Image (cartoon, rainbow, N blue to C red; front, side, top):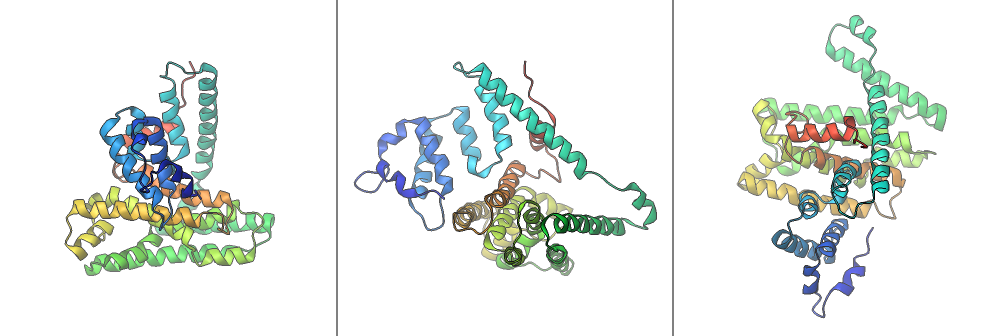
Length: 350
């Protein structure tokens, strides 16, 4: 967690940031990036963000500034940013060719690891398909096998029975889906509060994080597992960022296909706001939720740093995937190209 007091030396006697800061594009951009480490109730970094956005947008038009203003480093995925910065660095006149080649090799090695993991993720027992009558039973069997297989590995390696924890996470997800189905078939329009109380679970992040916790935590204390069972705030904030980012990117298309109102529509129905204003409000909620996650992922958090980063990375990946619309359902060219360069296309070394 960043101590905002270190920025006091850049303020004048009125407590405002010095005007001279606005002449330094690099320093201004660094201050802008630092502002996204702010926590709830802290004002210095909020002031810094307002100042830097205004002056960077007005005065500087380099690719680095434009890229940062689109999505700050703290809100996006490290590997995707690595690819972008490698390409930018290669165009610099003072580029170090040895450093550039090393960065490319590192990226390609990690990418090859991703490809190997994708092969394992996509494994499927084809014989099961011929033994079962319909797709629902296939899905159920696959899910049941997956949970049991993971539980067996954790019991063998870490000595804890985790099936009850994973089953609760999946049961909560199914209950959230059922609630949305009731809303849809009854034509019910939930309030913003009703929607969010259900939607942060229906987006699936608690299930993902429950599995991730048992995979990366060793040793696993029973008290920590019980704490996880109640979905502490870190999980809730991660899930909310995923849900709200998803809504910004997908709600229009999902409503056309037939779905419940999302956060944007709930806010419009409740307040009479326009869609543009509702989207601004959702972006504000994302920003405020990041502040909460920055705080709850700090030094006092009972989880490991690895798990905290996984929770943050769910938020980062969601903003990366839905930045240009529905990155899953519509597979627009921008998102498709980004995923291809991240996972499938190595960087040429020549």
